[in-house]
Image (cartoon, rainbow, N blue to C red; front, side, top):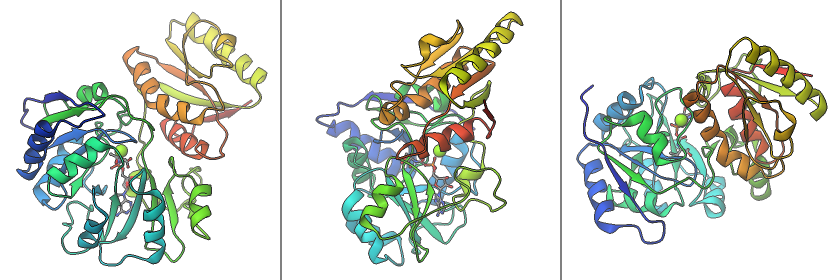
Length: 352
Ligand code: TXA
Ligand code: MG
């Protein structure tokens, strides 16, 4: 593909820079691509209603074009233009969680090209809370298609530096809003089913959704690789978020886990391999010398979520060949954390 000059523009969180945001919006209106911060991860934005822009997004990411894009809006009224039917339950979720880290799937209207939805008759829609994202969406005409701004197969970017590493020369502009607050992608809920189904767990947990809707279901494929069913979110079938080294999750009680991992460290290091460990503040001191990193305090799920992708990228940079990670509890955001970790590990779990 042709390379372009990627302009890296810093944006302050308090007052979004109007001139730069307008320029960025114009780039998208003219069919170009702009990466931008959201509260979850950085997005790679193009005009959602322009089939050519969606094709460019797939090309820039190196992503299979049957993997649909999320359409980002910045005004609830705009939802009515891109979907053909809005169930009552979706309006309830919108009232509670929009703007925010929730994506809902609807039947699409004719305004949305199949290039954007990967050929599906449904469309995923999100109204992000990040002010820079909102400003950009408005400046770009209201509808911005954006997957996570990583090259396909790499961890989602949680800082502008990550985006630049992956997409430099492939996008016209990068809006740098600093580190993302949440650090994991939005919760995706399919609203086209009688009972809404969580297709991808995220910051908005099953419990939070059940508090406002009577029932939600969870796609069986989220935490298991045993189910024969194909995940309903096409992207969930790809081995995403994969670090270059081999990642193994070690689950069990702490003394057993540290003892097992220390054995692996001894073996690996004496064979001249670079061994990494994903630990917590409570346990990091218990591991022998290697490339060990803490995701934060174990009970601080928000911190773990924020740090996880960055750590996976650091291991790539440092050339880690084998990586051992502690497992996390499944409650609350833990479901999203373990979903991403299991995918990064290709479901390689050792129980000790
Ligand atoms: O937090 C987020 O959602 C970020 C930020 C940038 O908004 N975006 C993001 O997009 O994670 P992406 O493209 O990396 O992941 C979108 C997921 C994919 O797994 C895709 O298959 C699924 O959403 N998806 C999109 N449209 C869908 C549809 N119509 N039906 C089912 N799944 C859909
Ligand atoms: Mg992604």
